[in-house]
Image (cartoon, rainbow, N blue to C red):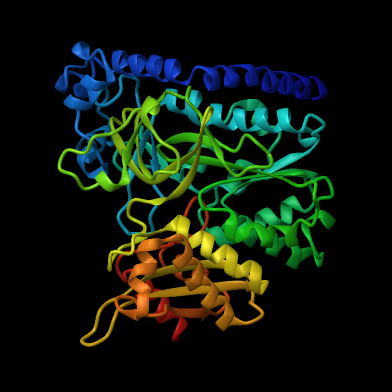
Length: 504
């Protein structure tokens, strides 16, 4: 096992030089991947439809192939699910990631090719360790085991040779052999479909292991941590796992969870690393330990385009290449991938915080915002306001969501928030006041609508009882995996059922 550990460490450290290469020559690397993707798909049904054989430049590609969303690709994906091949991508595709980026009842199934698994998702996982070892060479995480909370994966009913599941479960089922030595518990328990049963069993098994690192969505890792402390009677995770040193997380902003983790893992030496890994691909990593910015990974078989958010609803929106982006502007992310997603709008918005190298921050979702009154409130605004209000009132927010209260005759509209606290604020009214004031400070459109309560009144904010969001997610069958609470909505589709739970 010591030899395996040494080999793993050597491979991880070797990769850092390749990362430095694409940081130095980002446009060349993206151009190479563009040409590779186009030439690979020439003989597919999609490639023939758009005559990929004659596409020589990204400009020709943009002019010929429209921007896609799931609905426009769904007819092709449905055929692939039933076993047809060489539709969007040349290699056989047998796995489909059930998208959990939404809590709606309608599921999306994202194709996951062998190339996407190895060149993108697994490479991202290895690079995460590479960056960690580069930043913390004295690490001992390979001396113990990792706990990863996966989803469940089941055989697709459309075909005996076609499978779907949460992305995390697909990755776990296809992990290289060496990675299995470093995980706990076994795959059978990790992939249990019943989330509450899984949490119970994972907790009972892992308290007896030397766990050095954790991975997963913060929401569900906190649920596991609390179960472990309940079983053991310990006050924090370091009393259970004294060698715990590393947590890699993604799926939701870490801002609302940071204080909870400080209590669960009271150590200044604990290392947190954010990854931006979606069903559609692995996009970015937190490569600098003292910054929350994410390095855009440019050699994973993905060609990137960026759509200025103000042009999102244009009839023929024009995207920008990497060399054209500007700092601190919101862009919808458009990708073309080695799984056959062509000019695909994944629904996330990002902004660039540095251009050499290209580092980003996730600012929200194209469909998660409130703009009922022209206030253009995005998730990034909400996270910053929650953070400031929490710091000043010593609160810890567990989960939240917000939406509009529509105009009534003679009354202005408002925003309605449902917030569940892990630790109550010193003064709830002060928390609400600071939340509103901060939104006014950082969002001029919101401030203009709040002026003298003309368009927006002071927000209605509910202090939700414990387990409100857990019960709601459970009622939707969305516990565990990469499922997450939607932060903002331009309608009341999320607010009403959650308010019904509160009023029971």
